[in-house]
Image (tube, rainbow, N blue to C red):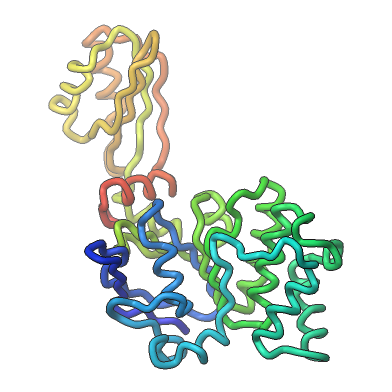
Length: 315
């Protein structure tokens, strides 16, 4: 339904988004991840027609956002990161305001109001002043406003930001329900929430797409790296670094000095198992090995690797 082609945005000499391309399909929930300043919000704003691209285009059902912006915006519901609510209005007044902007009035408005109140579980606050609603309900109100015209596409910028765990679960369940009928693109800093909610993840870093796939795809595509976590006593940093020359199948990812020990994280491919070699090295150097445990790379590891180093999904 949506095709992004060579999309770029410059702010003066700063390239916020650098010729990115990807496609999104109907009834797909996609997570859009990136560190602060990576280009997430700028990309979403260009996709909604709020910002004009410096180069490239956004196509929705074959029509481009530059020549057909109003027609495309009728198909999109957008919840920006800063939820634009009017605190002095009652919930139903605010939703009516949004409906009238969309040309939805009278009987059509009543039907639309009933639909979004049920879908967003606003029955208990529909006559309440927005300023007196909780953060969780305010997010639901913003989402209801984005949905009042029953769009085919929902673009949500940080929809669970600032919510408590119970509120996050509620919004997650709502998004998953909506994804059965609509295309949903959401950004978030909460990696566990993205992993629990979306079908696919796109990661942007420094304005460029650095990964695109399911969470399982991204993890398995990271060369299948396994981590070994060590806690060592009676060791020094030089002898730890020298371990690479003796055991070439490992890389040393981190060394942290504690009050009475050193914590070390090693990495190796899934095709090797250097644990015996690591143990023998520790014995030969008269280390006290307090702990040795292993773990697979998770989504947080992949995200940190891609956004810190600017690597690619198979890095």
